[in-house]
Image (cartoon, rainbow, N blue to C red; front, side, top):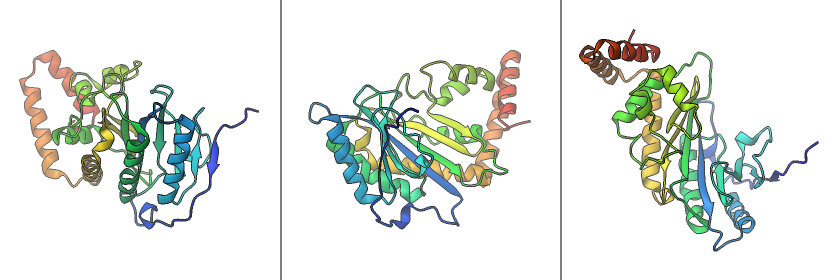
Length: 276
């Protein structure tokens, strides 16, 4: 049996209500922070230990630390994880937060970004990822295509500089290809969409990142609020005016295309469930 390299540090009982999912919540959220430890100033292990101690002061869950491999603990999604990031170099790590509320995500952003500034740095390799999903999965099949277009229309997907090989704008792919072709492109090594549908009720946002992204807390929180707002609008179907405008624009676009392109584009929007 392989010995686990994960260390668990028990929670300090801070009892922060803003972090807890309640019976009235419909959605749950998560966040991952990629960054590098500044090894010119700090020993990697010592810096991680200091970060872990400081995180303990503003959370009420256990912390899992593993600098060798990813934690495998069955409850890892309910813990803070400090772990290696496979897309980064040796001194690159990721902090992922537990499943939490919308306000909980903001709480972590406001407290973790200063730790990155103190002990590390961010560059074009690094990013911040959001997860948004419904708590209940039954009967949900989130309209990713509509959400993508809405986020694009609001300039969210192009708000940060592109990071080639780390976060490609999904609009650049899906606007030129059918869903099947887009899926083929996505599966090539080094092609990561900045917006993905992980499950029928779960999307991941990878648009935020780049050099010094950790110094943009206000911008990050503002964009997070908008991503969450549009997720709710699409799921609750309370975006009627936007949806009708979008359908009208697509129909006009279809009329303007040559026959072969029209067939391909029509197939794409039909697959997306936007227009029959």
